[in-house]
Image (cartoon, rainbow, N blue to C red):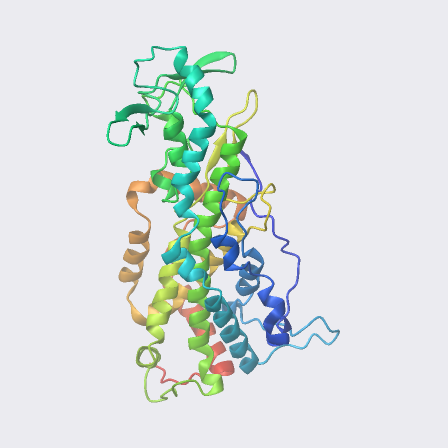
Length: 425
């Protein structure tokens, strides 16, 4: 495969804490699109792409607590670092800004953009109808199969109703690479292009690697007819869909950071030096916030909304774009980089803290449960790509000695900077 570049954000750009701590955080707010741009987005098949929040994501993901780093206040020559209290203020402000945007409501309740899928397909149908009629006139007019799908007259609505036809049952044909190929109906293709459901159940996902290698799929006589617009439209859908998982992970991360650093400003509780770390975390409900972050991180790492676009061009290697985005996308994207961040969070922070609450068998079972075995062939392919490009292996259970060593570093960091107190077991 020829692997296309996916992330187009500038990772060399440096952000400073004062973007949030000064001027009512107006600098940070500019990194986020307005939710109204989503609510007013009317054309999935139009010229404009869906705005992203990659810059805000990159800013938040630079608060890598397990590395024991401190954020720099501004770009002044003294490079003054923020103190622990300022850090708590920083994550609190960012969390509130994210909640104020109403994106969580848009993603989970309103769902303005996914609701447009049917309308978009109807518009494409009306545009293509003259061409479909030409195709139909060359065949038996009584044939219920046309280029769009299988049609049936509805007496009640006085309209044709269509069902899709896959490549095995369709009668649609085109000249492709100087040969005549059998193609799926257009409705079949557009149902999958404008699907906001998970990618693993979508035949277009990594199609040259899997669907087109189906024993029934004769590559000498059958094809999936990708048009240039198919790429742009499908990419747009996957950018939107994967942003939801990214958004939820970032919100959960900030909620955890607030909970874990609150003792520095008095918080809502005091640590009990006579109780263990496990008891303190449970009594303060930090374990619930931690569990939510763990679940949202693993959910992102499932990569269920990958683009997985493959294209075979004559006499050229197959082009692969695994993550949505790319150099042609009109807004910054950071999905692959965010996966690397999630991978680090899971192995270097989440798993060590899980050892406080669970035994290793439970942690391993939880990890295995999150990566459904029925998608094993997809994950094997995805993880090999990530290992090749990003030099990280598939999600795994870290050695107990590593977990304990990292846990000591984490707890020392929070004891020294954020007033954690507990009894050593």
